[in-house]
Length: 374
Image 1: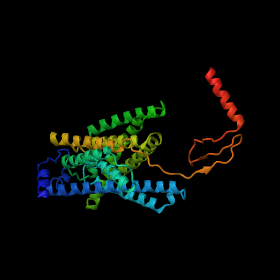
Image 2: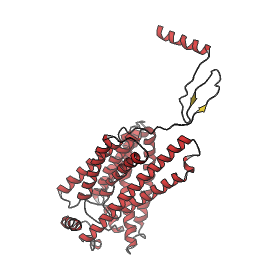
Image 3: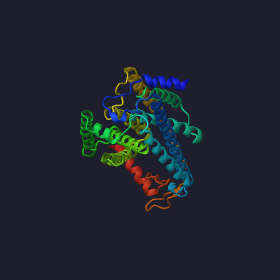
Image 4: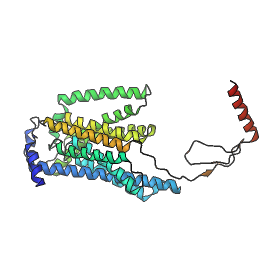
């Protein structure tokens, strides 16, 4: 019954685009084929994001355990490497999902990672469950349902000819030109004007992310076509897209790490999710023309689902309390000129001195009297 409903939905959704080359129109518009391929992409993306959330919590647990025991570094732990391996598998799943479903759908499904991570943190790491977590999770799940239901139900067979045609289309060239200008302006503000604001940094990440999404979908789609017997790996555009993918990912990581150093994760995570998702959707619309022929109701409900997911992620991530860890203390011993009886934590630059010598106390008292008289 459910399959019949989905097939009717796909059959009623206009998916054929007049901009698509004739050679890829054989199978792309059969409802049963579209349904199967579309659902495969959704399932792979959800599973990949779930594995990423497990990976992040394993790494968090490893850091907590290392901080409490003060033993070997975290990277010597086999558990930490298991978490890294799970993250690699999850990212590989996301990469593969772009070959089966529209980019404008796969990117917003990243909210699954945020929801799962919050649940795992509460159940296994004993973090506090807040009312905002429950409300945010409910909104994010509702938004995800709307995304899956009203997203463009198109399955394009990504070929080298199609990518070349899209890459020289006027709408993409205009979009790329605007992105380059905005990127240069933001980079000037960040480097020359020393404006280190979270929005500036994450906008740089988002502009790079749009090119990452375009190149990832192109590479993944051409590999999928080659596996099916339609060899695409011999075309130069395939390797051009690999270079764009690697370069944009590398610079994304650079700017994202800088934002994580300067700002709290509770600020970076929700803002980055919103910016990344918006840039991915825009890239799918402009480059792959994924909203071509989509009804206005579908577009409105899709954007409404995105909005609910954004609000849900903000509620889950906002003001999340930090995990307290009891770090071992180190006796500082004698400091020249002062008697130090207190201890400090490792990696801490704030040293609190205990009892001072009599001369030091007198000097401190004289300094306070001088300041009060002034």
